[in-house]
Length: 464
Image (tube, rainbow, N blue to C red; front, side, top):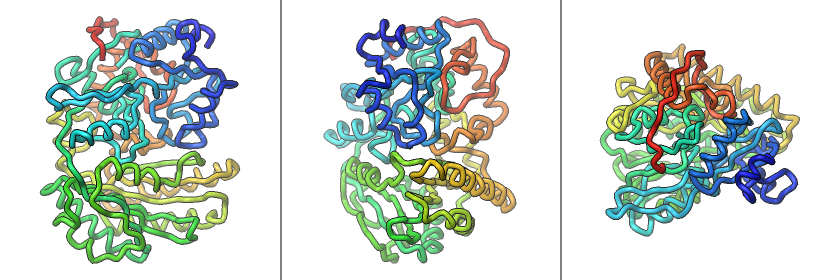
């Protein structure tokens, strides 16, 4: 840390400083916040990141990288006293549009609200997170390489790296800037609705139909959670919905209008306001938290049975401080896989032929560290039941959505096929030939390690 401070004076913070404590307290989950790195360093730009990585590589320093800090599991983007954390929150600046407004550029330290707010003024948006407070870096994660080189990665330059970064996690380098295509976007219809748990079966059946109809009209989003509400001491259904036109109950929502919500926050709004609304409704921030995920073919009865198993596992602990749990789903339309292939390739195992899927998320939150064991083991037991039962019913998909996964889940091995995994390992050898990021960068999801390394290749050092 002393060496880093000499390298970047005024940008290194020790545990006794207010800046260190502020950064620590801003993590989404309590487990991440309780890890205490020896120091935290805040780069302002790609050049600072380059100097930090060269220093870490030369001195074999262990480190973690934090952008938005939204991943829940301990060590995802923080480290203990054995290393330092690179906090990317200052690598942002104001998102800027190209002259023709077709591309928006923003730093990896930005939050999605920063990007959406700028684009909203131009009646534009881009593909991103549904919660404004989520960091863009963790959501897209991928580039500063471990040797300090600063390169561009896209479909024309270093296209193999661009392909690999779609499932890159902490394997290839640190992304410092994103250039993303924009598209016109005016007001939308969206918000949240809450329903009585008795409506679960019918709502899930409608969601199956909704998922199928996304092939005809891809402008809709519908996320559904079956959750224990500790304030009401009852179960509830929470839905997050958006249609990218100012049209209430379009044909895609056919059948949903017959349900009577307990709370209805739907309306014609701008996209930025909806992401902030979703953020405010999130119960987990700053508590103890565990997320686990899997993917399966869209099926209402399976999700109902998963919820019932969750009730069996978690109900004995409902009286414990801050206990909240939910099983949530959102559609993954079959078309998504082929759309990714058309835009730089698809390293995941998702295939259009697999049909429509749901990504399922188990979220558990609590306050007392003494409950860590029972909450974690209960969540793991629920995931094991779900995977075993989905296989038995012929619904299982091996894909694990990285942004919802826990560090215990085999994201890289399960989410690719053997041929793709070998290709990703070869790409890694090109950009991290000595495997330094495996040894030094803590957190994220690592590719399987190999002992063979190729010679270092020289790359274009143009600013990312």
